[in-house]
Amino acid sequence: MQERELTIEGRNAVIEAMRAGTPIDKLFILDGCQDGPMSTIRREAKKRDIYVKYVSKDRLDQMSTTGKHQGVIAYGASYEYSTVEDIMARARERNEDPFIILLDGIEDPHNLGAIIRTANQAGAHGVIIPKDRAVGLTAAVARASAGAISFTPVARVTNIGQCIEDLKKEGLWFACADMDGDVMYNCNLTGPIGLVIGSEGDGVGRLVKSKCDYVASIPMKGDIDSLNASVAAGILAYEIVRQRMAAKLLKK
Image (cartoon, rainbow, N blue to C red; front, side, top):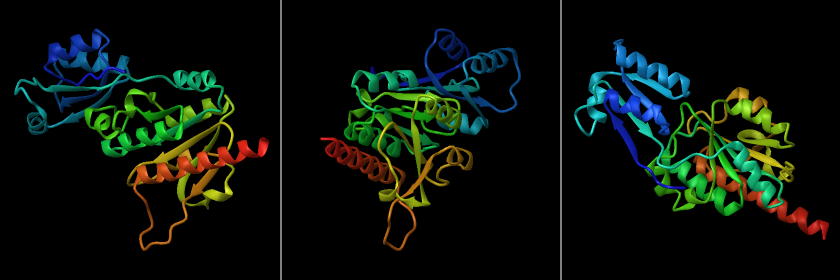
């Protein structure tokens, strides 16, 4: 992947970038602005399924680095996204059961970067994130991944729940992390699997959780009732690694 730090300000610049196919994560638009160029920007964003957030002029002024935002600022991905099919193809090329990490609303770039790093080290074939209400592949994510972002495919989808349904048709089973689930050692995490990690504050959403085959918990003995999202992802990812290694030994 090639790093591409993108912050685009100004109406014409944003319109031209979208029409040129420049990958854009999010658009911040001045709330209440309804003129012609802004209507064009909203129309182009809708066609490309780009997340749009309406904010105040003060907020745009704070975000602007040029002072010439003209009511719109676009943030682009620092790295190009892969596709879910790319991730599945990676598993086929390696002749391995798919192992995918799906993130339901991770907003902290350091958590996303750390999870991508763990995915790479644990042998996961890729990471899937949602387009909305989640951090994208920013420069901060790239730094936190310690280089793993260049080797680990990250796909972005409109709906994590629908993605799970589609991947079930490809033979994957799904386990999500939740402190009210079965202890992870008692869950069968071998075979083609997707590991679902929830957001920092709310965990895995109710609808996404209902689509998972297992709800796995991490045994905890301390005085607080939760772990950092990237730490939980690491623990569960390596439980999957442990179970896969044990199953492989049993076959010999």
